[in-house]
Length: 113
Length: 116
Figure 1 (cartoon, rainbow over the protein chains, first blue to last red):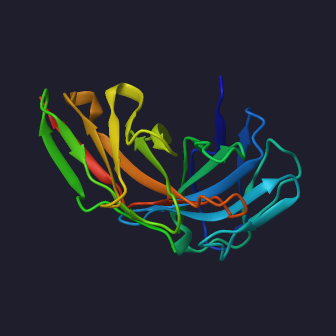
Figure 2 (figure 1 turned 60 degrees about the horizontal axis):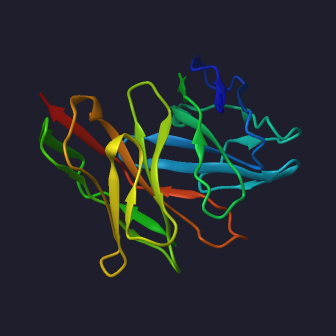
């Protein structure tokens, strides 16, 4: 089954404690990205990657890092989480075909206290 | 910069009645437009898209959307609503240029409530 898998689904952490949210896709997609969803704001792109070792900032990259060492994996790293990063996070992947739709993971609900 | 507006936070409709969820967009060039649905505790699921061609696009679960270039709208419709259609719906537009960062710009979402 084609899917994007995120882990963990729920995470509560304390301010300043580094964490990683993993994302993996099994569709051989070149393009992967991270979004955060906040009430009334829709989803906003954090980082994206066009292919292995090619990453770049989205609309709201401050406080986040990513890496793309393998095509299927695109982890999101919060080196020093703060309460304003409490949000619902989604990983997405798609092919680079011009009209291709994005496939989304189940989401990770992060709470930083 | 591209943008999407979903003017209604919530839409209420009785089961069996037609439903419309509104979306307007702003983008340079020809838009790539998408509708996604989010059920509680689930990720976003793709419903349909407009890239080019017929203005009426048919998608999953009986949904369709009409692209109107002059009104810059892409409203989601369904002839007969089901209680199971109750969910959060997002309209999104994507940068049409192949060298762009391909980000989806989302509207703020519309909660659809279908009453039995």
